[in-house]
Length: 393
Image 1 (cartoon, rainbow, N blue to C red):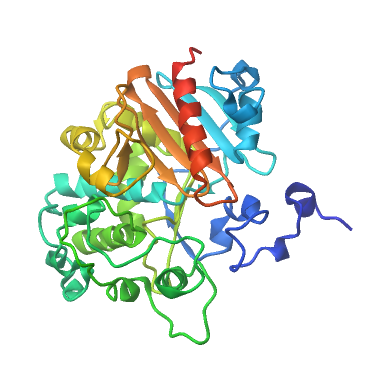
Image 2: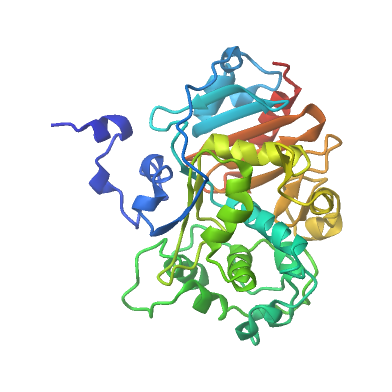
């Protein structure tokens, strides 16, 4: 007999394993239920509130002036781009939503490297409280980092991805350092031929590359996991508790979030957070409003101004990125470099939080894109978002 689960996803639940959860078609389930696959900690909201029906809009049937990768309308483009959840806000109001049949507005979805950007917002709060000095060495909070790649870099180097690090961010590699990294985070099955490592143990084995810190942009997820550990050292709290108290509760999130953890409970601050699409849109709207929610300051205004303006364009260019030719990277956030001032957080497999201050637009797109990177689709998505920003509701 075919189960309701199989009718929804096209396979049975028992088919989803730690070995395949990030691959299609199984990701259609696991990206919305990461807590069933990897141990996770709760990032508590004040209280969970079931949200009402999605906002209907004619936008999904409209053709936008960019070709939409050969798709006839917005809805078709969202399907083409493997979209699980989509929220469009204009001037603080949701004007369009879309959810795939296997997803839903009250369902969490893993956001992968958008986690980095959320982690940085906690760092912003701690800097304002005097609990973290971004110009201080990492060893000021984590003395055991001495001798590793992080032994002589500043927290600002880590925050801006300008650490000299002998590490290859190769998502599809099945051996070497990246495979060890995945196993240490409990994202991949254990390898009986290799010793077990915790996330921190793995991080402390990483070595410095030949060049100094503070040079070209070098994207490496371990940096952001280190930031999560620094948050714990600075606060004495677990990462999930710090994020809950300093961001999630003040934000007014309607649902608890979650973050995957390793065998010691260390959070995957670089990529393990799951949230609902609407709650992620609330983060974008808070940032669009200068770090404020209902008259309460969540993120320091000076930090936001710095994040949006102070990234080093030459460091970005020297990092040989083929995306955002005018762009910058600062404090775990991307700046497009375009005149509209758009900035965003991006995660593999098609996760986006896009904010355009000039048109007062916030866009969330959560996906189960089979290819973790897919540069062509990334460029399509950027063009799609810019067209949506130009659309008048």
